[in-house]
Amino acid sequence: MDLVRGLPSSDLQRALTHSSWVEERTQSYERLEFLGDSVLGLAIASTLCARYPHKDEGDLARNKAFVVSRASCSQVARRLDVPGLIQAQAPASDSQREEAAGSTTVLGNVLEALIGACFQVYGYEATSQAVAEAFDEQIAYAVTDYVDYKTALQEVLAVRGLQPIYELVEEDGPP
Image (cartoon, rainbow, N blue to C red; front, side, top):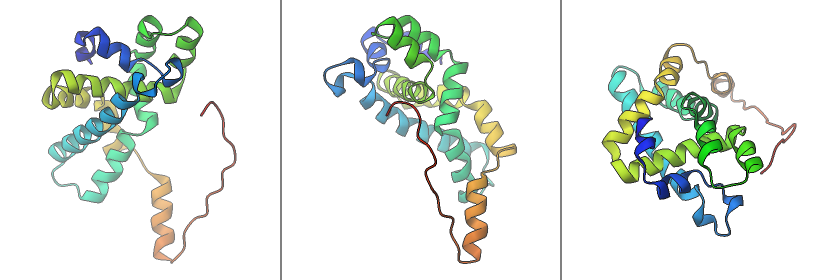
C-alpha cells in the first residue's frame, strides 16, 4: 500500500507500536487496529459485492471471512513487507522488533493498524481502493479455490440435527 509511505511519522509510529512497549495501551496500535479492522471488513465486503453481483449473501460472507482472516492479513502483510517496516521503524529494541516482525498475529494487527491510520489520513475511498488492491490475491482465491471445511461440516451436521464439539488441544505463543 503506497499510502503507508505518505503517512505522517506520528501516525506511522503509532501503527507500529505494540502495547507491551508503552505505559498506556492507548499509545499503542490497538485503537488504529480496531478502526482498521472495520475499514478492512467494509472495503472487502464492498469489493466482493461489486465484483460478484450474482453471489448470494452466504457465499459473500464466507469469502469475506476468509479474506479478512488473521492468516490472510499476515500473508498480505508479508507481501507488503510489513516485517521490514517493523524492523526499520518500530519504536522498540532490536529484539522486540525482530519478535514482532516474526509474529503472524502482530503482522495482522499492524496491517489493520496501518489501514486504520490510512483511513484517518486519506479517507475511505483512497484506503478502500488500496485495500482491495493489496488483498486481490486473497479475494481471487476465496471465490475460486477456497473451501471452508469447518463451515461445510457444520452445515452437513446441522441438517441432521447435530453439531460438532470442539476441544482445545494446545495453546502456543504469547497472549
